Image 1 (tube, rainbow, N blue to C red):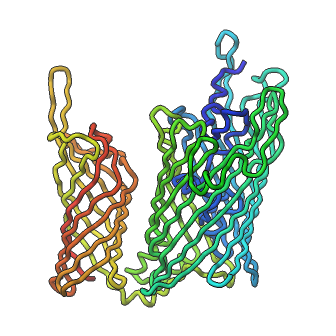
Image 2 (cartoon, one colour):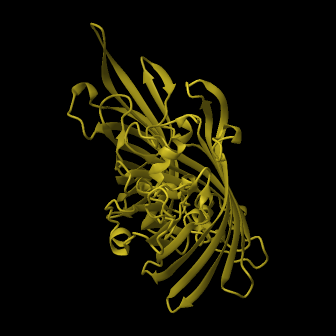
Image 3 (tube, rainbow, N blue to C red):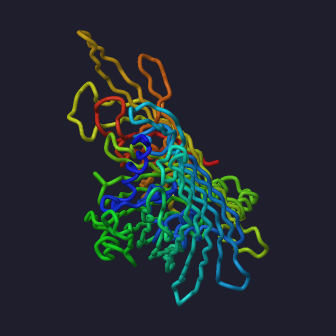
Length: 595
């Protein structure tokens, strides 16, 4: 007979389908989400109009909003799957799509192909006495083709987008080689499943007195996934037919001279396995419509009452370049809610920012036709659970506006950039990391250490936009005991950050200014020094967000000194000692020089 480890994959996959505890459903791997971006914010792809093409996994009507004109886009990533359970399981995902806009019609079409391959590792075959007599591989694959269309119509001040999509998926599930399967059964199942969905959104715009443009975009979506024949190995099992629905709200503040400044996204979603619970020998039946989803409780309120899977998420984007995401999901079968987090980097906003300093029309041309994105997300659960350490990383390449007459939504008039001031910011910082949930211990109290900062700034009216690199350093005494001996030594902890910040400037006098604003920081490296030996160390966090308050003294029109304090708002887990969680605080003294 097959060793029970062959079933390990099916069992540990239950977290993807809480309703599994009530009915035997096959093909659960089809519910593993594959979007590195949306996996960090509650997997809201069913009702959130999204500019990443792999949002089509959640709703085939989605993933259409990031394409502009005639375009081609592709993404690919390889992940370890269930690293908290096994070290030989991996997930591979590839996506390739084409976007078309017929001339003279407010209609857009996309056609794309997705391929998912889950390698569940090597399994063993044993006899009745437990002796291994053979090995084989277990794997699962999906090849999906999706056709989606979006119709756009202006009604007064509101721009309506209505999209619909349809997917056909060829699914192969290889549990075992046929020679290892009991008589009457088979080790491989072949199925074709279909997905369908719609997505409705409305964009409203309002011009502010400052000349900026405020955009709000609510969304509503529904999808029905994995409709098809039953899955057959030795016996028939229902397909993982799934109903999803969700709502969302997005907003963006756009400057006439620069483009997108800040943006946010928020949403709730709910999903339910539609296979009805049954006893052995009963016929396979499915619920229709929304299943057990309650629109008011589960979708609008986001209430998790453990009857269906409920998720919520949000994101914040600055300068169309750096996006911070977080979310949660839970439901029946979840020991505790899964916390999701992540970030994204977009070349479109980065090149637009760089172009403020270098004034190169070539960068504007690149932005019209090329976009590179990087997305990272992580799932956090309790210790010793299969999902511990699950991460998703993906690069997405897009070529757009390829056809003649294609709409240009990213063009920026670089001729106006020569009037934009550029300033060099450089100086020192003195930083410390403070425990937030630990009783004070003098040995572990942080000592300020010196780091440095260097960056560039530009001004838009009374606002300052900056991009910098900084090293933040802190140190503390630590104590360890071995047998009867006690060792006391100092640990130096240094973090390297890439920062993006915006400051609002108030100038009561010609020489004196006050500044305040947010800063987003991506941690790109960490170094630990113990006994004067420096070693590279894995950062305990990928990003931070905080507030800056500053006072600036202007000596001349071209030079100023700025004294500021930065306070990080995100808890940083201390993975060196037992200090628990930390908050970063940093005094900074910088010289600001006009270039």
